[in-house]
Image 1 (cartoon, rainbow, N blue to C red):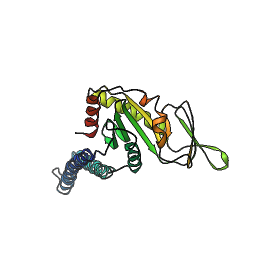
Image 2 (image 1 turned 180 degrees about the vertical axis):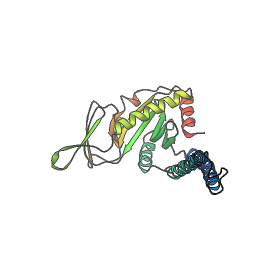
Image 3 (image 1 turned 90 degrees about the vertical axis):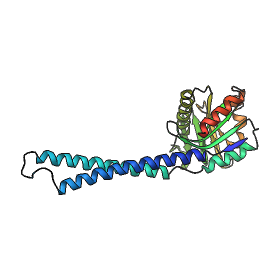
Image 4 (image 1 turned 120 degrees about the vertical axis):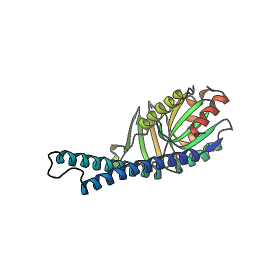
Length: 246
């Protein structure tokens, strides 16, 4: 199995975001500078009846320029915060490399506009498998899309995140991405926990997305994703090429 991280795609996106941020910031600084200069050296007489309108326009230009600068800073931070690696996905990839043959490709740390961030996507003859990977401990209960955990005193508490809803959203967006690029690739999903049963106890009933321990992933999905081959090697490679941004 190939275990890949789309670093070139992420680098291009960082460069694109940084360039856009620079251009927006330049327009913002220009607008603010013009507004301040024309305020210090007004083109309209202070005593004129139209001076109030003139001032209002300058304030609007100053506000617009400030807004552009704020947007540019946000884009620059977004570029800097693109994660170079997902350690949990890396662990999952190392395990799956020992379990799956060369027909499969795992793409870790996937992040693309229009799709968003996905921990990992496995592509192979059965199609594409979205993996939501977690490192949790304790007792977790999953019923349909709902998750609770056993807290102190044995009482059940709502978990802070809902991996099933996140996985369902990832599945939908990845399907739309494939369809937009005219690729017929079936998309499945799984919620994967890297911890063993010693640290994490899963109790599952009617799951909307199958949850499983990492070492049980193939067994859990043998009647789901791994039930049969659905696409040929050419379609699988086309999906990998698209996801890698090549």
